[in-house]
Length: 382
Image (cartoon, rainbow, N blue to C red):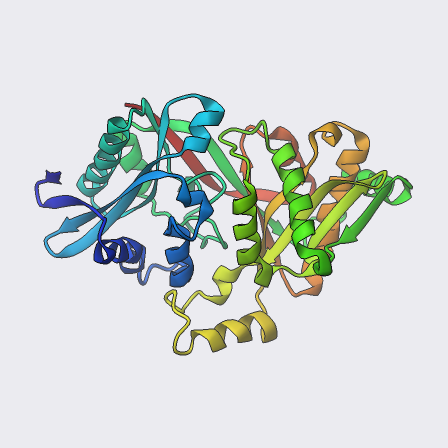
């Protein structure tokens, strides 16, 4: 497949896969808000042998070449878990990065569409790295600040490439920013909920028990799978995926940043705050050797980072409309923000939240967090 000077190649060999992985590092080098993720982590995330989310996909990687230069990439894949759950014959695409040239973008999207169509897909959805349980959405608003850990980077010219290709909005994903030293006193409703939680003997709170780490993760994911089950694009985490995520995230977890709310002794909700690793690795070009390790450890353990992210939180559906449930969530947010302040964090991103998730948006707003980035999921009939 080719388009004038652009050649689209399937990336199947070891060298081509490496070129695929290297694309964003060369494309975005020097851009003020680009935060190069750790290369070894990106390699493992892409691997269908090491990443259980990627393992079951029928997937094709593509790279775009202009002469000898690799100037773009995209992945197309069929996710059997999505098809089994939604019965919609959909295909997906992700890992979209390309030079500032609309022709290149169109050629990459066309290659992905052609692959998906050959697999019987009747529509293409994306961008997402394998599923909505990994990096999802195209940045369409909020280009003036860098992405936090596990959120995608994007350029302002990308949305027009998608629009010109005929992709249409499926849904928006919102990222909220909380200034941990602002917004006080809280709104009266928030204060009332926190007070109710403190005075209600049926409501209790605790931090993660690190001696039972794996059991604690399982408990949190049971809550998450229940809480998010009716959300757009949701695919439940499998036991294998939970194992993988737990192993990856354990180095970033501190017990007081993982809080659980219980109602009548039953775990009803949880919230998880992690340091924003992107801040600590901002100038390492994704490399830990030869000196990256020392810089990373110093920044995480000694000088600290100033920003954090809440990537996961949830409350069981049966409590979502109850006063006790709302009080638990409000208190969890306030507790974890206090933890963040003690650790020196000044800001925390709560992400992502579906634009249609009115209850979660309300929770963010009551915590004085404001939407500051928008990521869009697209769809196109093929």
